[in-house]
Image (tube, rainbow, N blue to C red):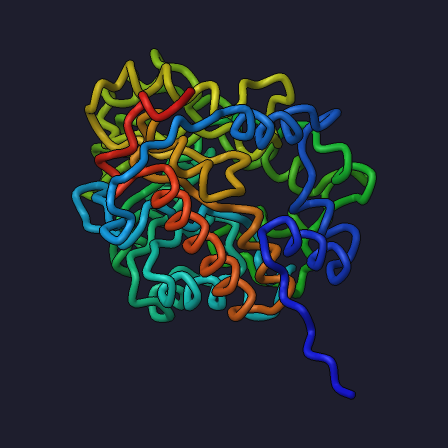
Length: 362
């Protein structure tokens, strides 16, 4: 008798499947956090600690997930977060993710550390896509990436600001993490790519790359510099304080992403579920506000919207789907999550994003 394989029924089960299929170095790179990985554990727990005072008799037949982000209509309030080196998870890498995101009618944010050129990703998706940017010590390289993104049809730039240096990711040190030289990283210069392949003293090649080639001296002036460089919307990613969100807006950003880099930078950092309310209050409806970090259930999305976010980013679960089954795996992860979000809306008495107000939280 032939048995049909049982597909994972939630995002955590996809991680377990990916862990079986990925080489140890690759799985640990994707899954790991900084130091003792306390924040890695606290992040989902912070969302789990939130409870919903659901409304009843609100006509669940009218539940709608549509939203507006950066002035553009989106089919649902979930975007694909930027994650690096996706061809280490599956040969199709970012192309598979882009196609799956397009099929799920959501936007993808492409990492600077992509293993696929932005132009190829743009050609693979009918959905909007954004580009995540680190600032190089050589501003000319960063400007060249911005120009490429503009020419390829990018919808927004996401400036990551929480990595002046890379957090100490002990799994990567232990595994001597590196990106094999035969794997392209087309948004890096040749010298930077060489560092990423070899590292230094047997430690993490990624940490050596950040220390050597990215600018640890970036300030708010660099946000203003980027704003003056392009007409694309600019979001600042890595904010966990209200005063920093206000500074981002004052220096020309169109919004912020509340993020602590997936627990991979400062292990003692505040979970994003706890940081979000202060940031939302400080922004007071000005600009776009998104959040990531430990979001794993549809009810987490309801909570994030109730706390003031306009949408959330989903990161690691995309990689687990990619490792499990390429494009089909990513599509299945997004399908599962959309079904969870829709169900959570209905059960919470939320007929649309406008109904997800702070009084929902108990």
